[in-house]
Image (cartoon, rainbow, N blue to C red; front, side):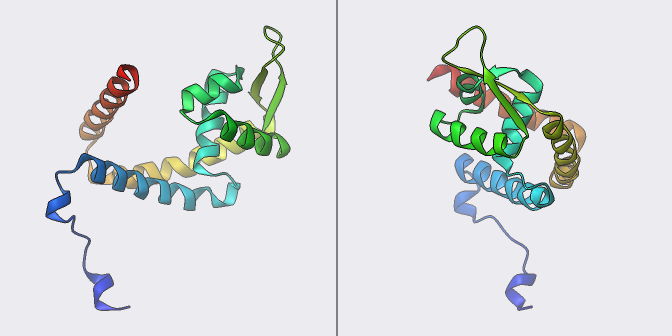
Length: 154
């Protein structure tokens, strides 16, 4: 191990006032932690997010899933194709609109989702360990407010 790897990371002062840098860096850290935690499941962080939405709000159309996850339709189709191939999601014809499909999580998908949630819950606790519970709730509320403001005003 070289001496440079022993030096704790310090945010460059010029970037410490940049919300983009700070939010992106924090997102990258938790994404990397979750990517590592999810390896035994074979799920990506995006797969997990989509499965969570389908499980919580399904059945729903691919278009609705695309809107909720803020992911383009082409990517949603590709990811759902893969999740369906792995028997984690069931795509069936929507009885209200034959042009669309209704997505639900299969029992196998629900079991894998529960395992993935346990693994990522540990990483969430680890990531947030520098904050007290009240600080996390405040940060969460502020992030939700920022995202909601900008998503609804554009």
